[in-house]
Structures are given as structure tokens and as C-alpha cells.
Amino acid sequence: MNQYIKKVLIEEEAIYARCRELGKVISQDYKAAQADPLLVGLLRGSIPFMAELIKHLELDAQYDFMDVTSYAGTMSTGDIKIIKDLDTSIEGLDILLVEDIVDTGKTIESVKKLMYNKGAHSVKVVTLLDKPSRRIVNEKADYIGFEIENEFVVGFGMDFNQHYRCLPYVGVLKDELYQD
Image (cartoon, rainbow, N blue to C red):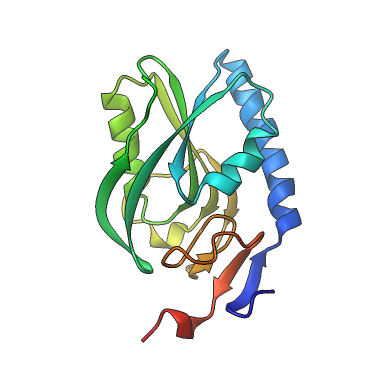
């Protein structure tokens, strides 16, 4: 375990097992709808999750990325900034947004609106982590890896000021690293 981690919240093996389960359910749902989604990974945190998830999709899914941010340090600012937009036209497509974590819900609310404004047929969300206790808008992910309490987590793509993303598990950062 990394010296800056208070505790490991979700082990690497549990993440891989849950990605297999999610891949199966998502594949069944989209096959039933006779659709192949365009996966839209929200950079940067979603990359490890998306990379593992796509291994388990039995679909002819394509993917693209957006860079969207709403964080400063440990807090969501509520101000959504699009740093990189999609390279792909999404007119008439079924979109599956891939998120690392949903907490306030403001990012997925804004991105979903943007997708529909660009002509998406449907927009669903898959997230590795869900923090419903922090929700301030009525948005929920359609597919959830793990529901967690309100703790500041890093690893498996999630960061604190661009650090700790490459940890192979989800851990809780020691308080003294981000609290004054």
C-alpha cells in the first residue's frame, strides 16, 4: 500500500471482477436494444476503468474522449469546463458516458445535455464509483461499479492534483495531505 493512503477501499481484483459483471450487463442491454454504443470516456480519470470495461463488452462499440473538469483540489466547483470536445459526430448515436466517479451529478448533467444538443439518440452513464450522499442534482448513473461513502478517494484513474492516478486500487487519501 502507498504511504499516502489511509486505507484501501476497493482492491484491484474487486474492480476487475465488477468490470466483468458490468460488461456483461451492458452488453445484454445494448444487444436487446440492437444498438452499439459510442463510449465517451471523460478524461482523465475514466481511462483505467474504461480500458478494463471495454475488454468485457461483447459489442461492436467505438469510443472517443472528452476532457471535462469541475474540480479544484478536493472540491467540485460546479463550473463545468470542456477542455477537449469529441472528435466524432454523435448525431443519431447511442452514447455511453464512462465516468470514474459521480458525486454532485453536475458533470454528467451538463455532458448529457451537451450530447443531446449534438443530436445523440440516447445517453447512458456507467461509473466506477458513485457517491450519492454528495448529489446536488437529480442525475444518476445507469450502471454503477461501487457505491461509496463521502471519502476523498484516489487511484485507478482518480487523482489529487494529478497525483495517485496510477494506483491499481481505489484508496482513501490521508487527511493531512489535503486538509489545512
